[in-house]
Length: 211
Image (cartoon, rainbow, N blue to C red; front, top):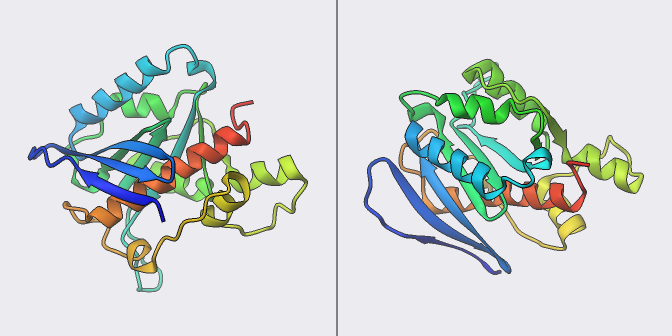
């Protein structure tokens, strides 16, 4: 399977940069807990897509450490955003502060944030970190409307990628159920966190989420 990750090994304490290869695509991925790096990523995103900000699609996903105690839910550890071939993995649990530009980015009514089961992710972001997403679309509902399918279908991102993009990938349970609250994420965690956001973006784009 043509999925791999390359660590550029820059040696900074503030952030790390990776290249994730996903079949014929690549994603430049920034992993950081530093507010100024988040601001840089957002400002560059706005600049690169300045001519289509009125219909910008953003893949969104979150990760948190799973809880095996009934009634205990761990807070969101990472927020992943993807636009085109650029992905941000923001380590919310380790940041000294959330930059104002991220609040503004998520609250922009011209941007359409997409994901599978995104409503629950958006709710957790708002309740736990005060991050409100103004406009979001669940890809399951979008696919159902587009192809006349049942909205009750509990299809996951992996199956949607196969249906819509013709791309098959696996996300091992050892990754989905891993410790996302660690400061130093593993290469496998980074790879699949990036892919989730990128695939969400690609499906949203293919289904015309911003229309």
